[in-house]
Length: 216
Image (cartoon, rainbow, N blue to C red; front, side):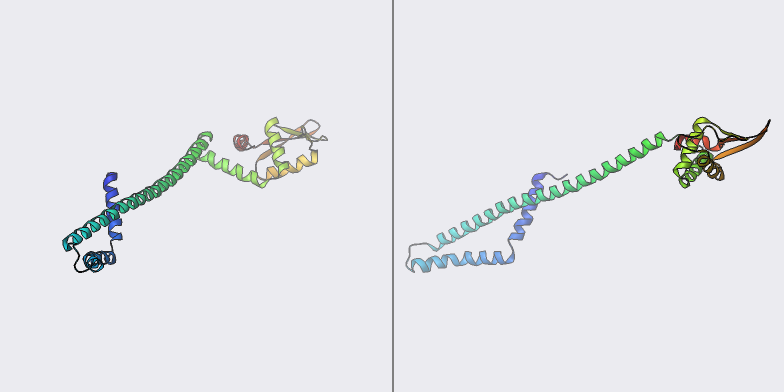
């Protein structure tokens, strides 16, 4: 990396050259050659002022002018470097903020992946299928499905209503939800003959049990 001092002088030289344009050089040179003549005219032709002394004064003035200009150029060069570095620091800070945000998002994704149970390809397919089917159903259907998942079975015998029922649900309301869920194979029903009539047993479909425990 180039030292600050060299960069400062390089910036100062650039500003110095920019300041000393062709017009300024012309004005300075003309003034340098005309100053002795001006002094001669002001003080008179028979003055004791030596022409050479006037030239020396002119050269000294030129040197001071150049030195003063370079000092000004040094100051402006330093300001230019500071501005340049401030811009670079601002850009670097923006890049760091972007990288921090990206790392934060990646860490969040990693944590989500850690929380997800490992599934085989068939299990992942079944999980997505159950999730998609659930999105089609209303809250009543999901409530009945969650209740059935908890109790394991719901039975209805000849001449008797479904039992047990979710809290706040009637037989008809529960039956409608079960029929809708059965259409998507989320629940299954088994009808068997028993002494004196029949018995209908409702259960959650075995293929969906594990995935419903994650989703409900």
